[in-house]
Image (cartoon, rainbow, N blue to C red; front, side, top):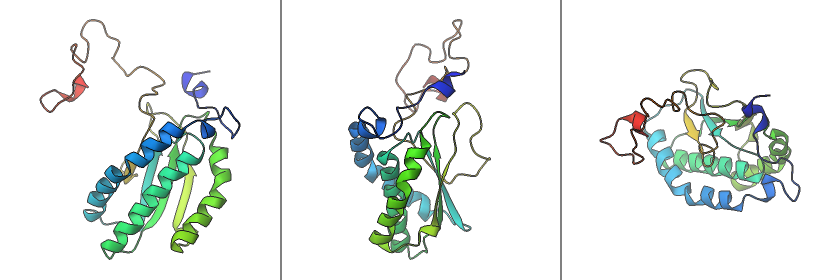
Length: 189
């Protein structure tokens, strides 16, 4: 079995589950909300949606934090749409994590999640579609130019394999440097 099929957070809702042991991640999600709002506002001001807005949550994991991120995104899009006097587009959410992720825990939370949306804004839940898209970052997850907005709060440090060519000893890609700035080539990250 490959690493990407083995690695995942502890599923379910038990005492040792990720859902019950991810308060730090929840705090980070709330802290970056204003940054996400600024980026979504810039994006929405400069984009015309045909009929839907497709959003991917990369490394969504399992449990209520996943839906907290999604709720934040939906509220931001809804509020920006009203400020811009635009109609809120149909939202398609693609939850992405490795194949072993417990997507069922997330799906069991969806009925209550949809009720929250309806109570807060009176939105028709049929305007928000949530899907699971398991896979890793080393192959294609989505069709080219398909996703409008990517969100990731806690996944990029959990790489399931070393990046291609990162282990070449003859010439290290980072040239011994760990600082990223505008003067360094992109490969130096």
